Image 1 (cartoon, rainbow, N blue to C red):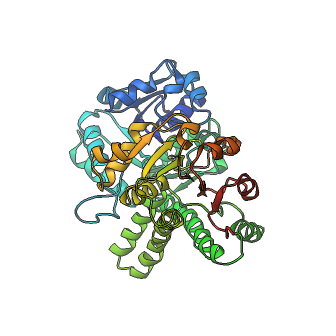
Image 2 (tube, rainbow, N blue to C red; image 1 turned 30 degrees about the vertical axis):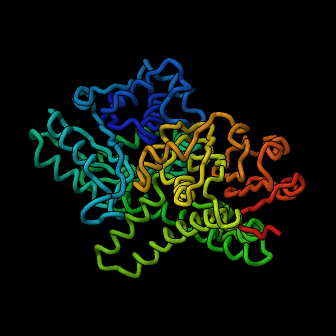
Length: 467
């Protein structure tokens, strides 16, 4: 079996950075080079202040601090890293296409293809290439085609090693993974490559948690796992709308069905909707694949999960508008939270973006506080939607570093991320500095209605009646 001495990872984002940091810390004899063409991002990975890392994950700075400069290196020298590596992880962005065939559903593989062509150009000896991005089925086939047809007579083994990290617990998920999936060709050289990657993970995980499959199964398993989880969130959110029209409480419904051992309690917390880089993208991929094989009913079924998620976000925004006497024009709405969930600075597909967009359409003035998300990210998220110019966004959206200042003179507060600190605030003090009547819309179900109503707030908690 090939011994891995040098690993290169192309892409220093939310997957590549943490995954390679853990591999480096657990495999001190392997040199790990993380490369990215984004100089600013690499500079942050190399920053002497570990609080400045471009990705926020609990436990990440400790792992980086332990391995960086010893066997973990971050640079923009992509070609040298490819040349020296025995194994190359591709961990670049694969956004949903915004143009052409498959627009709005299929994954855009342009960055993957650029990586493959670069590897083919530079490599002079045999390599194991591992697809680590969130990818649609058959990407391995695309990689294989490019590498085998444009290489220099070099042999490439292509593996699929999908990530199942939950942001906010990524380091924990890496150190104690439920399972590691490795897909590859069922040929002698394919088996050898799978065993080589397995040996890396076996430094810290028991062998029985490392599953080897064919490439199709590995790639499809990633999409299906996320689709099943997202479907649970959309299912309970659909019931939250029903709870608000009756006297039911969605938390009590969730608890009751969660006790059923066939169902279990995880992913049954109702909220303003799921976000993040994977759920929506992977379901849309699944929809696109089903359609491409003529399976329209399958596509329609999974697309409904996305439709329900969009409905939940729109419903939350509509409730703010209708409760504030059908107009939010010129009113100050404070947002507590912008990240798609707590303990991460990732904002991709965050519910906050879409709630903000709906309120901006009504000319609301939004003031945002999030403990980990920068002003530039918030402005870029809204600008990306294309509904308002940068100038209009900057006029209507203010980003502050102080939660009290954010709430001052606000007509309403919308809680859009479940950061623990929001529960600990002096809500009496917040009430005192807001305009009256003071409204709070809890989109993450983290605040106590009795306490909030007792203070004097007009309080609305998603998934239950608020009489």
